[in-house]
Length: 268
Image 1 (cartoon, rainbow, N blue to C red):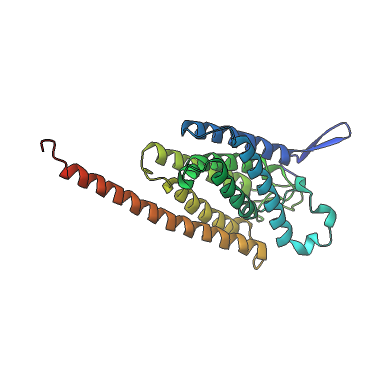
Image 2 (spheres, helix red, strand yellow; image 1 turned 30 degrees about the vertical axis):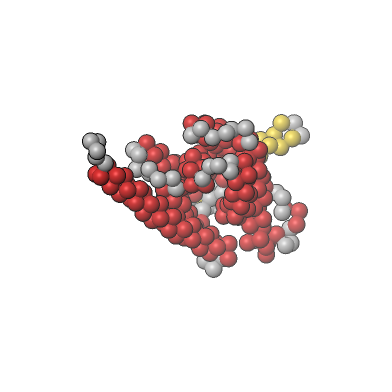
């Protein structure tokens, strides 16, 4: 028995709720990102093409990574390689392909804008879309739950026996809280130096994703599960390195400003 339906039918057509949920989340993230870029005075003309390229490359990378890390199953079921409606998108696979695509297009279409300033404007929208996508996507897919549980919060998911930890809802809440943290940091003026917001997102999201995989989702010794944990920790380490660098530059800028203020003589 499934807590939620995974599809609905209109005559001979079958529509999978998982796909609709991801589409809604992507559209909301697109509108929000466009608003943030407009507020930061970016040229919006190429953003539609940028968003499409990012979504398509992310889906392709996520599916390739999922199939590759579950090859023992998919090698015998080639007809299911493209069966996205059953779920099966590896987050870090999507990031691995979408990241170089995004970097290339950012330099091509916004060459005068620093990468750090661009990602600071974009990432809160991506995190918000990701939070919504976890709730509207995997919650309605086949095999969407985590480990078996007998606790009160367990839910039934299609394709899985017994009550499962509702990982999609947990991750949606985690990403929602991360979005609130980024917005609070931005509005408080804590992240004065471009790149600080990006670094914070990398650290928190990477650590939380690794812990989720370890505690709620992962299968012991499974290559895909171990890969997610390693990738999450690596992302957090890179974020920590970026944060230390940007904070040091921010202190240097502040020290230079204080020095100039101190040595300025209004009556030469």
